[in-house]
Length: 105
Image 1: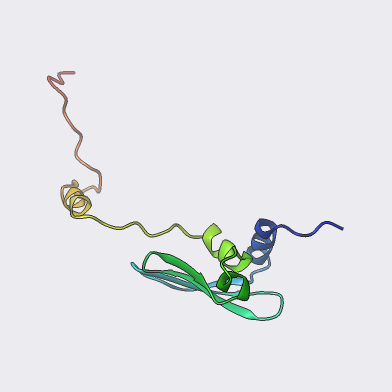
Image 2 (image 1 turned 135 degrees about the horizontal axis):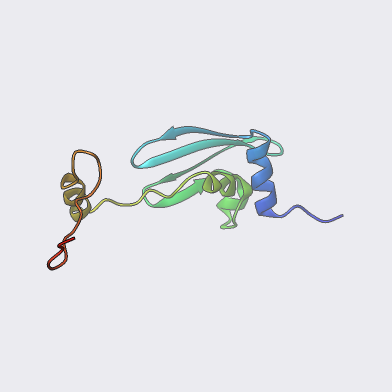
């Protein structure tokens, strides 16, 4: 019998409804993942991913955190230039169309 891969186990946790995201804001993501024996706290905070399971504490990749990472995107840092660019957006939410040279139709 073949052992289940870490990624397959993470997908199974999602498919079986064992992953519950409990917090998402601009700097944090936190979830609970029901593992084989217990529920684990996983998340992202201040530039780093974490899980309270023994595998992660020993520096190994764990299926609990892999499940959360499959359903999230790591928050990107916002730089002042990004903020200024967003402020320049047109009222319809789209960025202004740039003109290059003489753009006569």
